[in-house]
Length: 613
Ligand code: ADP
Ligand code: ZN
Image (cartoon, rainbow, N blue to C red; front, side):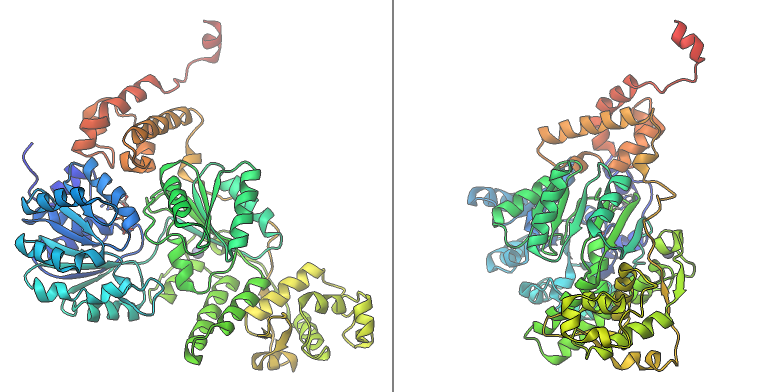
C-alpha cells in the first residue's frame, strides 16, 4: 500500500471511517495549509482528528498540548494501534525514557508528541522544538486559559509564546466550552485573533435529557438504572463526598459494580478508580464534580445527577460525557428543594465579591428554569448557548411524554399566605404541617393552629405541597433564608400572585417515568444476536488485557455492533465496518471473523423438523 497522501485517505485507511463529521474537513484543510484555527466542538464531536490528520499530512511532528497527563498514555496507545507514531513526554517517564523520546523527535520519527503545558514551557523543550520543525501545535482544552472557568491553568496563559517563537508553525486551539466570553479569551490570550474560527453545533442528538423531580430519588434512580442500563457503564454525580460514598456502597450492595471518586480520596486511589472505569466494562463511577474533565471513554451510556448542578454550563459539560461514540445515551437527573437550598447557601457563604455572587445566583436560576420547563429541554439548552433548534427534539422527557400542567394559582396563594402568617420563619415541612392541619405540639406552642391558614390545604397530599414549594422556590416566588435554617421567605416576585393579579400553571409531577419508547442500541439487539455480541466483547476484552489498554482502544462498541449486524464474511467485507482501518484489519480482522463464523445466524427452519432431527 502506498502511503496516504490526502486527508480522506488517511481518514479511511488509518482510522477506518468513511466520512468527515461536521467541519472536520475544513478544519483539517486550513491547518494542513498552514493556517491557524480556533475550533469549538461539543464533546464527542471529533476534535482529535482535526489535528491528528494535519500532523500526518505535514512534515515534522505535531505537538499536542494537553493538561490531562493521566490520559496521554491511552491516547498514545490508541494512535499506536493505528500505526501512527505517537509518544508523550511527562513526569511519569523516567529520564532514560524521556531521552529516548527526545531522540526520536530529533530523528523525525514521531508523527505526534503529547506534552503538558508546564513541560512545553521549559527552556529545554522550547530549544528542542526549535531544532526540529514542528508540523503544528494543537492546544487541547483551550478553555483552560480562562480565569473565569473552573479549569483554569496558569501555564495556559503563557502559551502565546508559541506564536512568538514559532511564527511559521500553524496552531489550532480546541475546546468544548460553548460560551462566547471564553471563546474571546482564548483568542486573545493565545493570540489567535486572526485564526479561522469554527463553531460546531453543540447539539448532542444521541443524548436523551430527563430531569425528574420526584421524591424518593434513590428509588427512581434505581428504576431508571435497571430499566435502561442494567449492565452499562455510567457516571453518577453527587454534591458531597459523603453522598458519593453512600451511593457507591448502596449500588454495590444491590449488585452493581460502583467506585467512588472525590477529592477526599488519596490521589493514588482516585487514579486507580479512574483507570478501572476506563478499562473495565459496565463499571459505574460515583463522583463529585472533581471527576470527569477529559474523560475520553466513548461508551459511557449514562450520566446521572443525583443533585442539582450549579449552572447550565456545568450540567451541559457533565452530561456531555455520555455517549461520545454517538450511540444512544442518557442524561438523567433527579433533584429536590434541598438542593436549591444548599446551593444557594454555598453561593452565599463564599468569600467572593457581590458581583460574583450575583452571577452565580443567575446561573443557578437558569438551571432551575431548565428543570421546571414544560417544553423541549434541548431547545432551551441550545438556546442558552445561543443556538436555535427549530423543532422540539423528540428525544427529551418533555418531548416524549409532555408534562401535564395544573392551575396552581389557588394552592400557591394558600402556600404564600401561610409563609406570611408564620412570619417567614419556617421551613417546608413545618409549613406543610400547618397547611394540612397537623396539630402537633410545636404548632400549638407557636399558636399556629389558630391561624387562618391552618388546615386550609387538606385537598393536597403533603408530597404535592412539597413539590409546589420546590417549584415556587425554583421560580423565584419564594426564597430561602441564607443563614441555613431553610426558612422560606416571600420575594418581590410573588406579590402579584398574593394579590390575586396573576395565575400560575405548573407542571404536574409524573409518578414514574414511562419506559422509553426507543431503546438503546444494545438492547435493540435481538436475542439471537446477543450471544455473538457478548462473544465479540469477550474477545475484545481479552486482547485489551494482553496489551493493557482499555477495550475501546481495540474497537468501539459501535464497531462491534456493526459487526453483529453486518456479519462480514471475509477481510474485504470486514474493512467496510466503521472503525476498522488497514492496521486493525491486519491485526484483528481474522480473529473477529473467525468468531463471527462460529456464530451462525439462526435460520428460520421449521421447528418440527428441527426438534425431530
Ligand atoms: P472530542 O475530543 O471532540 O470529544 P474525539 O476526538 O474523542 O472527540 O472523537 C469522539 C469519537 O468519535 C472518537 O471515538 C472518534 O474516533 C470518533 N470520530 C471522530 N471523527 C469521526 C468520523 N469522521 N467518523 C467516525 N467517527 C469519528
Ligand atoms: Zn425535546
